[in-house]
Length: 259
Image (cartoon, rainbow, N blue to C red; front, side, top):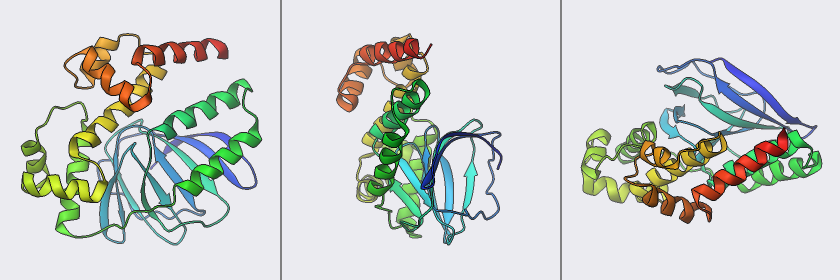
């Protein structure tokens, strides 16, 4: 798979890059193996991964640890999918998927902008990136069970179109299991309800759109699947502590300072 790579920071301890997938790859890739332990942080869309014959989904609410000892395969259906990659010079964790707070996206964006404007010193970024890798070590135990795979199918279905207003029954049909069983299993394996998972994905998309210069909040709300601006604004404030309009203003002010 071909990527466009942008190196944001590099030291003797780690390298931080932004990756953009050049073209869509709907089929499973051949085996890959990294040369150094790496933490991959999906920023947009979702993709499939396979390790030890277990297939699972990675999305902006997760991270993926890759190690030289563990080959992996990937399947991506989205061109221009963006990720951040932190490559370390030491081995710190086993390969696998880990949960990722939405706040990490904001932190990465802030460090990137700070480096660009000179408002953040490289030492501060290096320490912050190391701290991120050290607090993101809780790799999930992946399963090949039919229940776990049903949860993964549900994750992929929701993450592929988080703006959709699918019901529990519709999601369960896509996951090939009963709605009652899926509701319990999804919370057990992910720590979130189906609705909570979809909301986290929507909030990640909202944050990205606002920092890309989105002006029309009503259109953004509708694009994300909300019936009204007020419904969207309430969900956004619960997740980020500020309203979308204030976030838009802050993002605009940051853009002006960079010019």
